[in-house]
Image 1: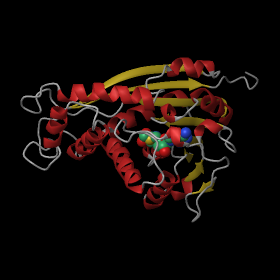
Image 2: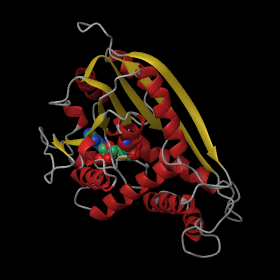
Image 3: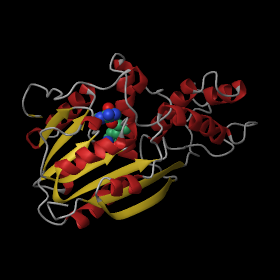
Image 4: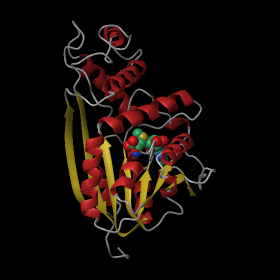
Amino acid sequence: MTSAASPSHSHAPTPHHHGPGHHHDHGSDHDHGHDHADTGQDDVLAEVLDLDAAVFAPYLTALTGRIAELAGDGVTQVVDLGAGTGAGTFALLERFPRARVTAVDSSPAMLARLVEAARAKGLGDRVDTLETDAGAGLAGLGDADLVWASASLHHVDDPAAALTGVRAALRPGGLLAVAELDGMPRFLPDDAVAGRPGLEARCREALEGLHAEQLPHLGADWGALLAAAGLTVEEERTERLELREPLPARVGQYAHIVLGRIHAALDGRADPADLAALSTLLDGGPADVRHRDDLVVRSTRQLWVARRPADPTA
Ligand SMILES: C[S@@+](CC[C@H](N)C(=O)[O-])C[C@H]1O[C@@H](n2cnc3c(N)ncnc32)[C@H](O)[C@@H]1O
């Protein structure tokens, strides 16, 4: 673990576990793993994460507010598990002004970005990093008041093992917050492309087949998994978010990236007429999602908050 203020980067206490079987298709999820050999894809994923954080900023603020109510005073040690570009890290640093955050991720590229962003925000001295596979345990981390895992646990090969590691990293009475989502947001009205009603719904259905193959833990019963790991679930909520005009800035750009990834992922898997229709939303022409005023952003997001029992022997 190393401070973001230091020039060097932390190194994994355990080897990477990203074998070939861990590679996910880049069109299938807002939030998946990455191919370290392909920095272009890393860049796209990072942009998606930053866009999501910007578009859903009020939601994230509400989540951290609820977590603060449950956590009470005295949160100083926080872990952001699968931190990505740091949306959660920065929201938690703001919410808990006395806290340090250890950002954990298996991607050195993500951690490097996060460190750079922390420095740019003047927060480098409150951020540490740990490069590791969350499924391999959180070596060296202990006594955390709060572990935050947003859109990351469903990437881990063995979530039960990861949760055992999280429990060990929490102090007795500490909290784990798991934020999950149903995949990338939806953006299109039903009649977005003339003659192809239901275009986005059909594309999403086809994507679900990919999710089942590549992200088998997306949509898992996290409440049951948390309980099985010896944590006490105190909060479970599902929110169906729907953003309409006036939309936050950059929604068009977010839609463009998401639909572009879907187009790439479904190449050869969807009706060619649907793929052609999708192209008209991406090609810079009059129907392009970056110029439309009829987008509606929809996303279903879930939160579980669970506590390690206060009895240190429990
Ligand atoms: C969508 S991102 C979520 C990022 C951030 N938590 C957020 O909500 O914006 C998933 C992150 O989990 C990381 N990740 C995937 N598998 C992992 C694993 N097995 N161990 C640690 N991190 C992992 C990815 O590198 C990526 O940064």
